[in-house]
Structures are given as C-alpha cells and as structure tokens.
Image (tube, rainbow, N blue to C red; front, side, top):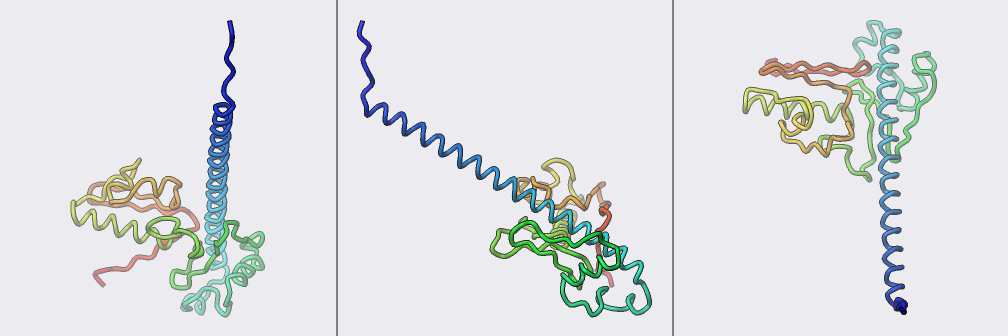
Length: 208
C-alpha cells in the first residue's frame, strides 16, 4: 500500500488558514481585553464621581452659613476643578486627590447643578445615546418615561430589557450599566425614584 503525500500547495494553504485563524482569535482576544479595560476604567471614574459628591456633601455641611447658602456656587472663589478637589482634601472631606483613569475623562464640577459629573472627551463616542454622565442621562430618562406616561398612562416596567424597550431604548446600549445610581420603581400612574447616596436631583415645578 502506498500513501500519497499531500501536495506542497495544499499544505501551504492549510498553514495559511491556521495562521489566519490564529490572527483572528488573537485580535478578538485583544479587542475583548481593550473593551474590558475601558469598562473597568469607566467604572473606576464613575465610582470616584460618587466619592466626590459624597465628600462635597460633607464639605457643604461643615461650611454651611448664610453666605454660602445664598451663593450660586458652593466653592466660592475657587475657579478650577483641581483646586476644588484640593479644598475637599484640606477640609478632610476627602482622603486624597482623585484623578481620572479613562483616557479623555475629566471630573468636572457643574456650577448650575452643584454636582460633580464625569465628562468624556469629544474624541470618544458618548457613553450612552442620552449622554455621558449622571446629570445628562437622568433628565433624559425621566423625559422618556414622561412621554411614555402621556401616551399610555403608564411609566413602563423597570426590570430586564423592558426597562429600556418600554421607553423606546435599545437594551444593548445600556448593558454595561452606565447609570446605576438611580432606581425607578413605577406603579401604574406613580413613579418612585430612589437616589444612591452622594447624588441628588433638582426638579422644576412645571406648574410654577
């Protein structure tokens, strides 16, 4: 019995296929690692924003007086975010300075909202279709729930994918939980909103 050797061209083709498969798998693993690293960095930065808001709440309580109560900004005469964070550290409201980990991220003090927010550079895609941070996302979520209520008399469900599909959003855009500091509990025509410590909401009375 004779065993016929494979043609060199066939062996080379099989080798090329194996190499291509290895390259594709390596690229997929690398991209998965990059996405994991990015998610980790964003989670770290969002955690720091919560810490900054909690520290600022303490700072507000120990610096509370009539003058600060009527001022437009809690950090009177402090004009940069770095100096504001330094003020929290000096007041022992914050253990140490915190800096963003994600590339293009910044911890910004919002004077109108009197809250720390996470800003992502415009060179990067937005964190969600409704914004990059808590103060941008939450009002848009509430607005969509309000639209749903005006149309159907219900705020929709807040569990599983229905939390998003009921108000016209794609669940895939929210699978990494970019907004996990606010909890909506609808009950027919009633909507309960629970806020995690370190965050706050301001409401405008539409009836004046």
